Image (tube, rainbow, N blue to C red; front, side, top):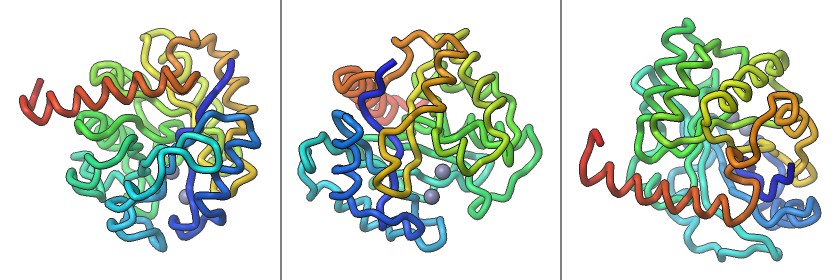
Length: 247
Ligand SMILES: [Zn+2]
Ligand SMILES: [Zn+2]
């Protein structure tokens, strides 16, 4: 299966990543991608950037180094209410919002509370997808998380970086991919690159998609058109939920 965009990348602004936006864009082009989403870590991550970074991403062109650029964030989930470290005004300016659990921002809790944090984040109208829910440091009820994504029209991420840095993720990611296939829940594939040469390289995620027999229609970044259609629908949902909370 082709993955046309990388929906999870970090630039030097994240503090522990090592390439500029231009370099990440060149990396995306070398990997044959049509585009990428810049998802630097939200302000609660030590060493990352200030919220001004996210407010000002709109000064960037829509194409960088020949590929489509999307402005995003990997926001930190701060509690079991799914509260995030970026306010709605900033989130609303971004094309794509990932939310995820990181030990430095929210120490792992029991399975029930980890699950609740992800489910509540998925109920936030501004969140488009959950990053690396297969992280074994945060045990979750995978079915409950996948069903929450399904119910809210959100996506679940399969994260290539988990195979490098979150050891033990594979069985969880396989279970999650199978649950997505079974329930018809959307998937985004992100590399979680912190360096330009990792952008757009998905060997483990592609093998996982095959092993879990995920229909390609569920992968929202299989093409630029499919990803833009997903973002258009999400933008409409955000607007509707802002006008009629609870719908
Ligand atoms: Zn990082
Ligand atoms: Zn992360």
